[in-house]
Image 1 (cartoon, rainbow, N blue to C red):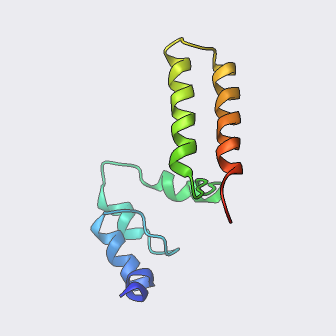
Image 2: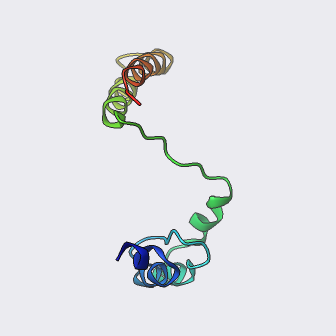
Length: 100
């Protein structure tokens, strides 16, 4: 089943459904037409310079630290410089505790 879904035919079915942008290169045509009111081409074009979102064993922990610090800055509880410094320190500490 996984082989079918991840292959060209499965990705074309996914694209045609409009559910999400297919992962199989060259099958995005149906997806681009699935929501005519939106310019979905911008997402396909972004693949030229896009990078994967970083994840790790403790993604939820470091994301939480990041969000709390940035929210504090938006609420005026600290400067953005202070919030970003704190977030970086907390995130690095969390990442340092991960096991390979």
